Every structure is written in C-alpha cells, then in structure tokens.
Image 1 (cartoon, helix red, strand yellow):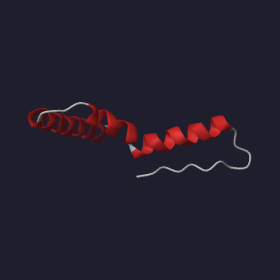
Image 2 (tube, helix red, strand yellow):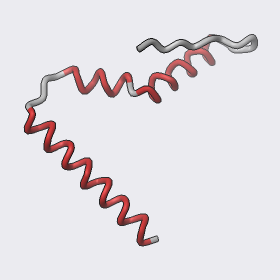
Image 3 (spheres, one colour):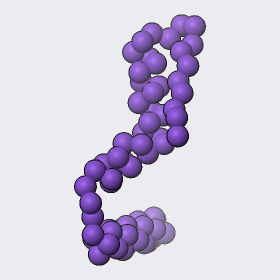
Image 4 (cartoon, helix red, strand yellow):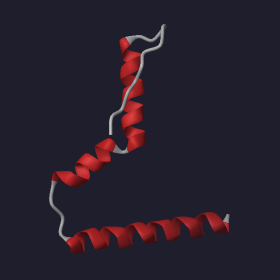
Length: 66
C-alpha cells in the first residue's frame, strides 16, 4: 500500500505535509502500526471486539432516542 501525494502548483511544503498526514489518517496506517506494535493475546483481541460492538450498540440507541 503506497500513499502518493502530489503537490499542486501553489502548494507550499506545509500544505503538502498536511495533505500527506490527512491521507495517512484516512487510510488508517498509523492505527494499523500501533495495533501491530505489540503482541496481543487472542482473548484480548476478542474482548476489544466485544467492547467495540457494545459501544456501537449504545451509540445507535442514543441516536435512535433523539
């Protein structure tokens, strides 16, 4: 997976860096790196998936009531 950012004719180096950072965040590269940085046991991964499902359910309930 390669991320390519092309500088426009009026873009400064700061603007190009901001574009690059935004693309990396949208692609999830940093989060993927952080997830792979340390080994997690399967039980820990399972618990995180369950917690994420709970958060999504609670969020859906909260927005359904409004």
